[in-house]
Structure formats: structure tokens, C-alpha cells
Length: 369
Ligand SMILES: [Zn+2]
Ligand SMILES: [Zn+2]
Image 1 (cartoon, protein in one colour):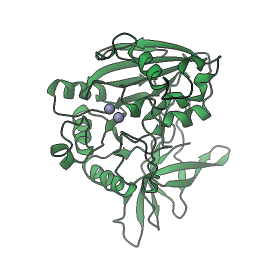
Image 2: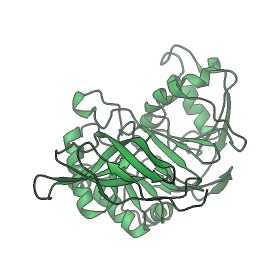
Image 3: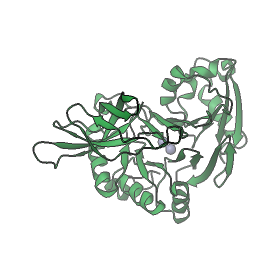
Image 4: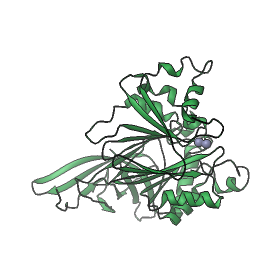
């Protein structure tokens, strides 16, 4: 179906749609990026962190060819595992798990990933050879965290097929229709950043990185160059980066904005939130970032970003003030040759401009599914 679609009308809870649509060909390929864990360093269960979420890093990328990528295995992996179904489809290359580095927050979900305990499943893991561990670093790390007496069973009870591949910064390889590029980042004991180019768009994943090393800063910009989605470490504030947290291996929203601008990334996602950052603090970080860069999200658990989707987002007018990152139900009416069709969409509030007159608020919504 190549016909140009008619412009749909969005009815929000209390006002008609205003502006800002992205309409694409309905047959276009779609890439889905799911955020299962967004917190850095250690999981949080403090109620003041519930809205953004407390699970440590885990992302899932579903490519248009049906290939599934899992980025990092923090505690978010457990929830992904509970809903996991083996990727299917003629062109699917199965599940590929890319691990940035071996710090706890990026591996601790593995023992709780239920699909690993089922014999018919198959997973391919990728990470680098650590100079502290040598050959089969990733395999050793997984075995060590389940060794006696740290965990009740060891890795031998995991009956799924597991393959391990060593990768290094500077490599490029393809999996199905997707091109993966790796770069070293600046982090204690090393860390890899990944760029995944799919037919529906490009995602750069650069967590756990401290700016200030010219060569590695350049690597970061290479990863993020022209990316649709640039996920960047934003653990600390700009002040912390210069004082108490210097040398800790992390970055800030401000450094993310600088890198996104220089690399020409389209959307910046602030990621790896500090365990001590409450929802209110993250709201304020997001606001500051938005003042400096047009398209910024703060990653939150359960967030889904769809690339190449027919409708990605809208600016709508409301008469009440919603909360940033809150969910919004939107009804869309699409006029067609055989009458109107109503679609219910679930969206996240990513921007609020309350400068409108007569108590009206302009709200930016990104649609998920
Ligand atoms: Zn981390
Ligand atoms: Zn780390």
C-alpha cells in the first residue's frame, strides 16, 4: 500500500489534536525498542523511584526481520524473561544478547532469566575479552555469579543452548538485515558501546561512559552519528561530574546533549539513572535537557519506542496539566474512503509547554503500543 495516507485527527481526553505528526507508509518496516531496566549501579525499590523504575539496565530491540537483540542483562531481564517468546518468522536470526561490560548491574539478571532453563531455547551472547579474566570472559562471569555459595544452583542446570562470541571495540558485523558496530567507551575495566542499524532506523546504546578522553569521546560520536535514538549514560549532574563523581566512569544529561548535537543524533535518551535520583529529580533533569535539545526522553521502565511506525507522536492540547512520563490514552480518528476509523493509542507524555493562554497546555506525546 503506497498511497499517501490522509492526515488523521487526534482526539485527546479534552481537546482536538494540534500539530506535529509523523506519517509514514503503513507497509514500512518497524523496529521496537523496549526498556526493561533503566537504573544504574544497583536496583532501587524506593517508592520515590517507581515512576522511572528501579531495575538495572536491560533493553530489547525487535528488528523488522524478526531478530531479537537484548542489550545488557540487568535485573530488568527477569521481567523480559517472564514474557519472552522465541523470535519467529522466516528471516529471524533468533536472539542475540549484547553485554556492554561485567559490572553487576549489567549481568545480575542472568540467573533469573527463565528462558535459559528451557532446553529448546537458544541464545547467542556477545562481549569482550577482559584482561582480568582472559578467554571466555563472559562465560566465566556468568559461571562465577552462580558459583557456590552465591546462588543455589550452578549454570549446568541452564539447559538452553548458549553460544558465546568475543567482540572488541571497532568491530562491525551483520546479523540478518541488521548491522552492529562496536566502540570502546571510557569506563573502569572497559565497556563497549553498540550501534544497531536496522532497516527501520538506527539505535546507539552508550551506557557507562565518562567523557574527557579525546579518543573515546570520538568513539562515542561515531556510535551516535545520525542515530535515530541515542541512549546515553546520564547518571550524574554536571556539578557532580566536575567534583565528587569525577573518575567514576559516568556522564550527565549535559554531556549527552553535547554529544547528540555534535553527532547529529535525532533523539537523546537519558539512561542509567543514579539510584539516588528520585522521580522528581529525574523530572527536573529531563526539563533542563529539554531546554537545550529538542528531542529528549528520560528512559523509564516499560517505555517502548517504535522506529518507522506510521504514527510516532503528536502535540496535543489539554486543559489540565499531566505529569511528565505519565501515560495518556488518545483516540485517533482516521478519515478514509470507506468512512472513519477510530484507533485507541497509548502514549507517554514527554513534553509539557504550559505557556498557552486560557489554561490550555500543549503536551507532547510519544505513542507506544
Ligand atoms: Zn552500569
Ligand atoms: Zn559499569
